[in-house]
Length: 124
Image 1: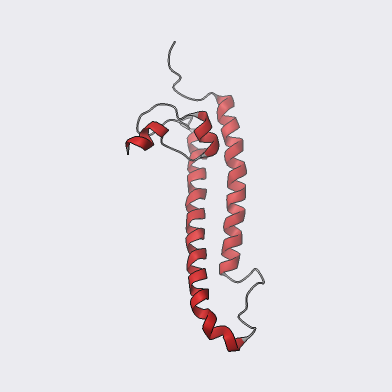
Image 2 (image 1 turned 60 degrees about the vertical axis):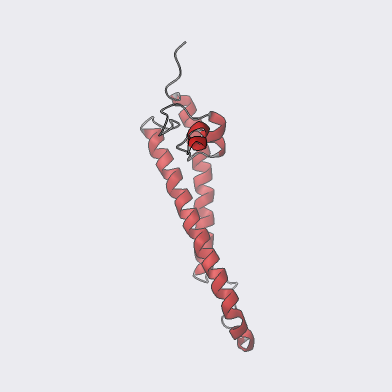
């Protein structure tokens, strides 16, 4: 019996649905983080309690740096999901970029932007 070299069109559509769901959520989360960074979320204290503002500057800077890091991670995740959609269109989705073998379906359901099989990941 020959080893399967790619996922079927039906399986690719199943993966596409999972990716689209995660992509929608990721974009929503990214927008929320960016609104917070731009102080559009209505939770800003910039115009209240100026007496204590000096004490909060360090905390505010750390919080903003953390938010920026979250935004960057979310943007990278979105790019990974979008790249996965391109691989679905090209019918190369789910093929490990190092071994050339199919990535386990369970792994792709959990990490739909994965480009390495567990075997390849362990060998790194």
